[in-house]
Length: 383
Image 1 (tube, rainbow, N blue to C red):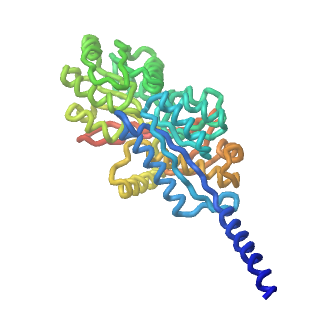
Image 2: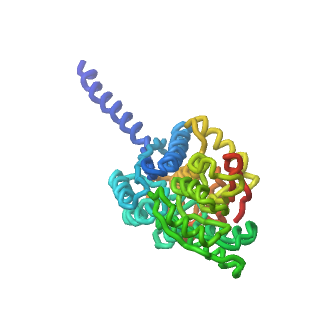
Image 3: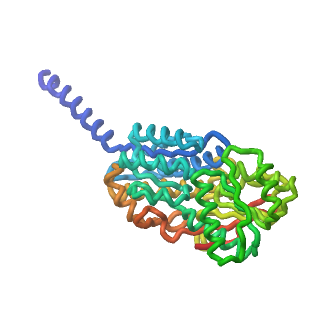
């Protein structure tokens, strides 16, 4: 009897020790995502967030081991409303929650101010869609992006306008955001690089909440442009196209990735003429990766019941590349996996992902699109 009374607490201690060991073998990894889930471009923000959810669900279903521990991934999703102040508040909230890494933000205007907060906290940040060059020019070793920047995007569109579209008289409008202003400036540089073959006949400005463009479009019409370039998002571009048609402005309409969504056709309605719009996505896959991207789009539609807008595949890859760095480091601690992220070489759905010394993607691709029959149609993939 004395023997049994001694063994009972010992057995309890052993059971407790095993339970502690089991829980110690589980590693909770918190991945933050920030995008505009409210406001005019909420459809783009939700598209991005869905890409993150898809990656997190797949990782948990597959079972991932980091440093000998089974990882359980949690997505902490925040809404920045495409507003810089809301963006920095969301960033601070994720820092306070001690996330292991952040995917986002969607817009350059929110990504750039938030990047300082993540840098100060030592938390790696991978943006799947912010294209303003300033983001990676601040010297923050925590900042990365998986898409081409505005220098590549706007410059390519400017050269395309002159060389392929044979534009002679170009009007430029931007929405004064970090993204819109940046891509418009790079577009103008691209046009001017062709040595005076085309002239910038007008420059006008709006904002990312505007709905009435009558005054600026009337001023532009008097300059008789054959091409209008808009630096901004699809929520503004759609109504702008409608008002251009109403005013009888029969010009090609060009823009960057912000307008290059599946949703532009609905936003512009019958003002979206066949071949009238040319836009570029700051990414894209060449022939060898086409099947992988098609499979992703099909899986996305099956899971969420809607088509990919623009950047969900890049968000998905951003999560996967961050986790790959954690696996290589054997740790989800930011300071430990950050060096692995900086030197990563990863084959994703969107192509090969490796970063240069600034955190920009190496050999980033661009995809040019137009619209026919209300559908986005690929024109070319270029570097």
